[in-house]
Length: 540
Image (cartoon, rainbow, N blue to C red):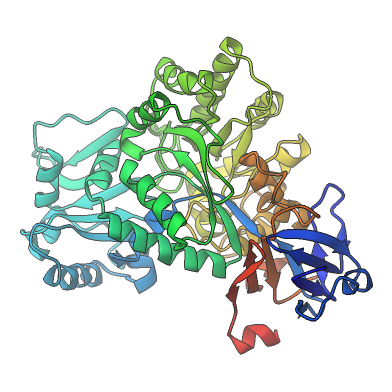
């Protein structure tokens, strides 16, 4: 018998045969039956909750295989340029000034989601402008890509940055013609500042609660957290999960941005290993950064950017350094991964995997590549041979496609190449990299299917996939990337009752309008954790 049944629907099971069913029965936190409406009706008891889908799609809960839950949540506690629609330096400075007025002297004033391309002035704020906001608070303005920032003099002092400070490996402390610091920080120089501008445990927990509420409203039931503020972040995350403040399941990637190498080694020494935990919170892979961002861009390329001749981006490590760090984690039983956007960085990471596996062979390792941006055919062939799991971000195509065309030209045909991956049998797990882009999985699915930017510009349309293939990227493939396809990622008896109801039939909906679909309900562990109250959505 069933606690909850879904009837008269379009159930996209994402099982091995991609079967479409009509109805599903839930008992406790598990799916107990999938079939026709008449079959499932036989499991109804007087206490059973009956949900009539009326022909709408029921899908496995969405899995975002790479986002930053704590960063997204704590961004909501500062000046969020995206959420506030800030479009000028003047507006930004006014918002920072307002925040500084209510912030105790000496504490951080933070802004996030800044994009100079959206500003009227088409530039970053200057150190002098931030100093004019306040000389009593360290001020930190993070770019939307989370790889660059601008800081005021007080913040630069906190970081120990002055005229004599050398650029760190894999980063840059920007200077003017006289050698004075401008406040602009790139890659590892930025990452250090990012970690300094950390939050209290109470702020972390509140940010996590806010993020979880937003994610479940988008149908997300599991996330792979790609790292953030280090040990305090992980401690707060586990406490928030235990307290029930976080509804989504978390696969926690071990990475602390600027100090990821040290953090990974401390976790190895502590005896941790991938898979430790339970269905709510589980330790994931060990991760480092190999290069920069795709949208600024600073990713490490084999050939220069079309927009900046002579510039091939930034690498964080030499090959032997990367081999040592991740090789040690692999040898101790970790799944390993790294942020790698450019083809040169991806090449380096694949060489690292090959070296680690030669020294310590392991079947079913499922080593990952976070983003795996510019993946040319030779790199895809190596991924397939090694059994690597890439984690692409299709929504970047929609949000930043115009920049990709400008910066890498014809190479957009190899950017997040979902078609090429699917054709080679590579299991690629879809992700948003939120807060860099919108976490809404329907935008990611839309972008993978259509491969057009917000302005309608084609962006590597040779890499389009079908709607079913895109759905699989954000469901079963995400479960596979965390070794959890046996318990979630598809609608099958025995699996966790993590489900999402849309306000239409996704397979018959016009593919160019997939992003317009909405989530009506989200279920985790057999319980409804989100119910849309918008009558317009419910009537659509």
